[in-house]
Length: 168
Image (cartoon, rainbow, N blue to C red):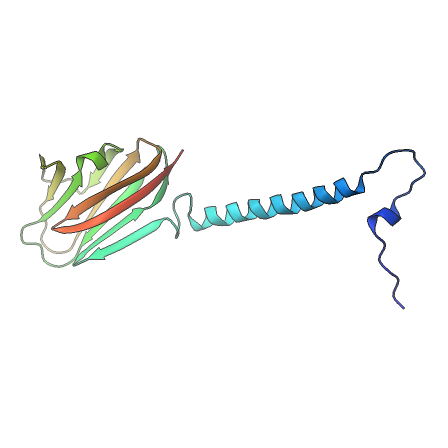
């Protein structure tokens, strides 16, 4: 016959004249476990990229022969990459257009390779790259504001919808 497991109340030595609030102790243990579980969930989400740089954050969109890759979640004042890959033969080069309202939320640190020219037309900033053959273009942005940012990027007549959430 196995000995029965004693509860916490049965084990307590009641020789001292102190009020014992065993039910509060049990409640504290439950709250501790819940808090630990919540912390583990946050750590897992961070590892997966919910707060930037991970599989939950990275977005890749392909339209025609153009691939756009960007981070959906990022941190304020961190340097963020927006990559554009144009496959195939480009006889007229590559034209990338950003709405002026979208660019107001970012500081452009650098563009690789450097564009051959840029212009503002119909509320969009156009960057032109001389390219023949497959082309890779990388923009390095620094978010100026916190919160949701949405825009549309046009690359050689392919329009990409882009959404970011910038954490403080």
